[in-house]
Image 1 (cartoon, helix red, strand yellow):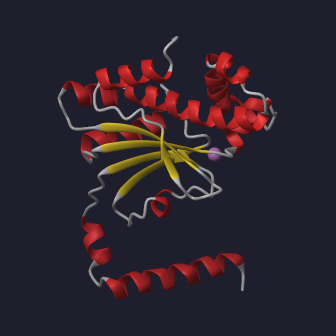
Image 2 (tube, helix red, strand yellow):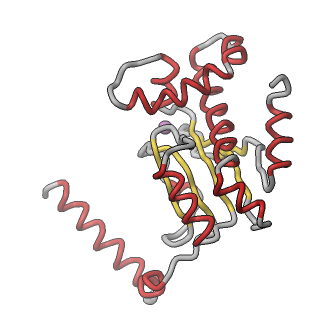
Length: 213
Ligand code: CO
């Protein structure tokens, strides 16, 4: 059977299994979605948002791009955030990076891969900002792992500084931004402890993590 036929076959099997467990599932979801979470993660096929946190369709709003970057002028990411926060009223934005990220590796090693090099400039900016800390690490493996973490922290910072999050906090909307990292080798998430529910929270965490900045 052709590869695409397999996907349709899988889809039918999945839909019928879900319907068997809950006959109203699709009818209910078609009516409305009410997710509490916005996930901003890497496009990497090994980091599927819903599976990792065990959530069903309808429970998590998802934006993914290479290396989970929140760029100040990226209308795609900003629109997702604005819709999630203003319209869906999600309570949590979770920026999730992962160790072993090809985008981070390419950025760190200055690989030339094409158009994507421009996107990864944002990660190279993170590396440049934290050059001192990265230079101390002795192996490429350690540098890469740390840059995966630093990138999450900086993208949380970018997310917190968007008009979307700032305005939500200004009007006292309940909204928390988290920075997590996922391990491809063990399937586990780790909290990078930059959880912020206000601008003050965010600044305090950032200053704790980077005291000399
Ligand atoms: Co990645």
